[in-house]
Length: 260
Image 1: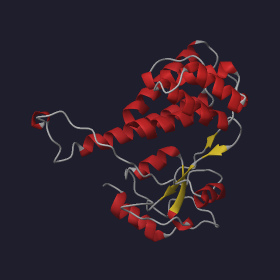
Image 2: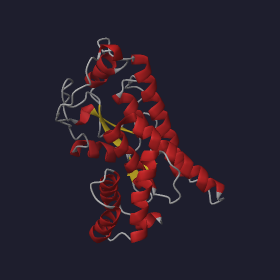
Image 3: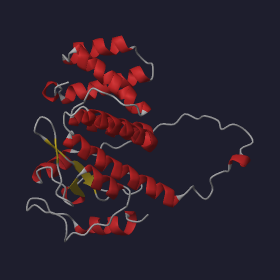
């Protein structure tokens, strides 16, 4: 599957349809037909999308390479929608794919290996924090559950954090992380970084969507900040004259989020 044939629109729609197939909301043939008709993707590549997503969910080796953006997008969505265990399973599948590809003698896929390493570091960091936190003090033990747990319907409200201002901050910093200077260069030559609201949007933090509350970060440092794994030092951050961080948000992070 040639990288320059696959667009971001194809990747996003391909993920949606591959998820539908995996959860049996549609058939493989219907998904492939839809992906081809809606995005002009060739049928072989469409079939690869469906198969590779299934392999990622199962931690299985796959043989057809997805481009950097598609792989990053699939991993991010799996992590967001299915949790840390599913994310680690998908990383296992990617590791097996890269080892298979390397064994063929066709190259080591350095960009995908870099993505894998950073994603594994992030997953290990999150797992360590979970392990250190332990179960809630009031968590019931198995012996306390006289009856099977009942199911309840819930609604999740999620704030979209990739705001216009966040995109502006990323552009001002040329999509380079303000902590480490790293950027992810995609197959089409564009760069990828993430906007981080230092005082998070929404309850309980209720941070504002303003330039002085946003950092341009790589995915690894974005996760570390979100999880409170690192403190922030305004003297060590990379700055741009058109973007100045408000010190009060740095202090809020260090006092309220870091280490909690």
